[in-house]
Amino acid sequence: MLSKELVAASTVPLVLSVLAEGESYGYALIQRVRELSDGQIAWTEGMLYPVLHWMEDSDLVESEWKEADSGRKRRYYRLRKEGRQALQAEKQQWLTVHTTLTKLWKTQPSLT
Amino acid sequence: MENATQFDLNDALRQWREKMAASPTFRGADLDELEAHLRDSIQSLQTRGLSAHEAFWVAGSRLGENDLLEREFEKVNTERVWLNRVLWMVVGSIGIGLLSRSATTLIDFLTLGTYGLLPGHVGKPNPHLMGWFSLAANSVLLAGLIVWAFRSGRRKEGFLQRLGQWSLKHPLLAAAGVLLGYVLNSVGSYVPVSFILQTLGATESGVLLMFRGWWSLVPLLVWPSILAWLLMRTSRRATAR
Image (cartoon, rainbow over all chains, first blue to last red; front, side):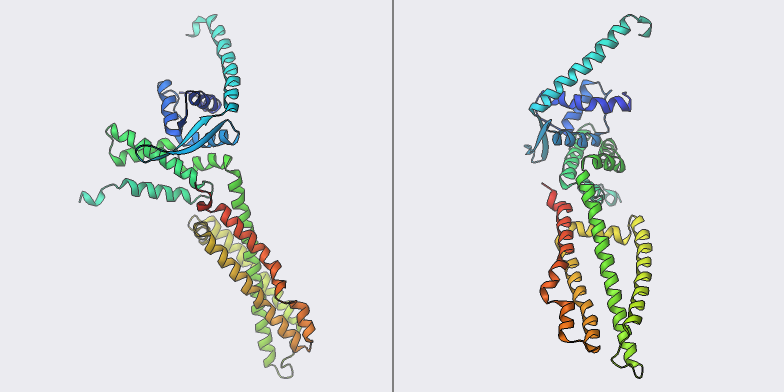
């Protein structure tokens, strides 16, 4: 399980990355992240929505209510140009942290 | 017996939504989205063998505690939260104004009435005495009102809370009610004053100086109009999709 701080820091890059695969809605987004992380990243689900709304206010994503075949309405989120740029920046930063940690841990095999 | 305890999912969701709607933080669209999420979640849990009751419970706990959600939504719905605060400030100021004016009017009538009964004073009220009476009545009323509002506002099911929820559901009616009360009260409070002026022997121009015709009521509409706008702005129907 991720720490509270890491969950907070990683939510936006995770959402941006899932939406880069195509438009999606809150519940499906959460399922995708849970599936990819083998259940390690389990958000308090309702907390995702204020983040999505903040991202929409910041022009990173846009949303639209759509009716599914079942007749149920869902709010779909789609990445905007600004969102793609933000994703690039996030990717750089997370890869920097990742490669640095990996290099360090390679020289400290006792950790694994 | 088994049927008596049968779980109604739609009813449970409606109750959940009503509970959430009691908070001014959530917009109608927020609740639509959270409800859609709950329904997806419940459906998926049910296909994995959970009963409707169990699925509702699990989906709800995964969604998060109401207080937690409220705190998180407050961060993004700041405009809404602030509009609600301003709304209550305006309601408070109008409410106190209304009550204070009513008290003054009432005291004015009372003093006019009692003075009329005293020999030698018939039809000759003492404006100084009336002023003191009115000041005392207003102070007592205001102090009482603040204590009452403080107590009622702290209770979750207090009169103020319920009034607030009702006015959010019926913004037009609430705004119309305030407007009517305000106008009636304003007109009412002119009556004793003009009566005093007339009994004191003031000419019609003196009354007119106080009253200046019907159009002088127009500025009185400013606050109720602001209130009406705030009510429309914060009402759930106005912001829902």
